[in-house]
Length: 112
Length: 113
Image 1: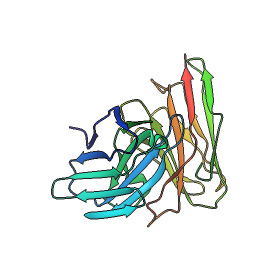
Image 2: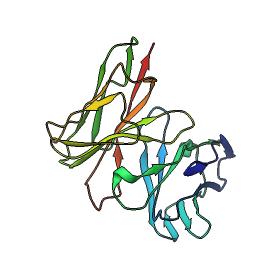
Image 3: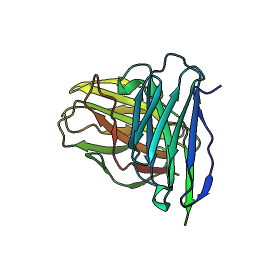
């Protein structure tokens, strides 16, 4: 079993839809959770960061962490074609970069 | 591109040749990282460096080497010993300890034939 799993997609949705992207993990010691967005042939950019359990909202994006289920989610409201990208989750036991574990990414296409 | 310059964007080499990928940052951050990205897999850490003249192996360091002679530069050499070198290579930086925000460069796509 991989340490962090993501549905690879591709996930295709119409413009304006609510998108739910998810990761599951096996290490109960993870407590720092990140979501990155990666456009094709570009480097990932940090979208959201959460510590421990709970929700965090930033504009159209909401990150949720459920540590009891070892499950994290990223919701995108009013999705736009510009949201079409691969979304990577990452997590860590401590907030040191060398300990980050990345998921394989979910490819999202938002159709106009 | 997260304050990181990587060059070139695309690189082609023949099998058996060593190749060096450039990574430069201009934000005076201490920590720098090299990752490899393959389709269907998460980013995997090759090497990282917290300070000048010091670096540590990541999860997949075999067949790679690095140097950190200057704070702003962290080049990665893919040696002929790396069995499967074709991949997308990403360099990242952060502020070091107590910093969760990694910033990635644009990446270098290496193709070895």
